[in-house]
Length: 141
Image (cartoon, rainbow, N blue to C red):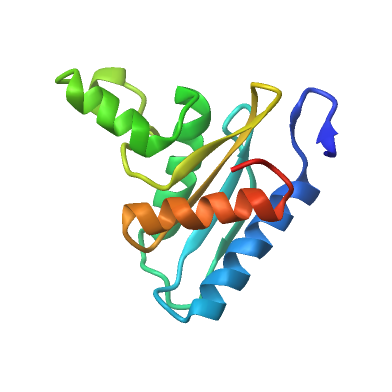
């Protein structure tokens, strides 16, 4: 896999993930989506919005990818964990964290190298598309 020297997802691999998600979402003809890929620090590397996606889906996708990196886990699993502990996202005092399913941490040899997220459909479908993007870029989902 082509990662940059400080072990983060490269633009090339991030774009492959985005392309894979968009191709699948266009093929299935369902709701349009937004997809965001961040590096190991949570900074945006690649992003795309399909025509007709919701006004807020781009922001949500970016925040899901950021959350997956910063929390070091998938966003749906994190939401379930904090809910089970009686906590909320506001307890973290980090304005960009979001507890919506659909963000996935990208790992190589156990190290987080980025995050990928989809928004525009329901949580399980967003996560499924994000994992498809991972596979399209050559990562294990």
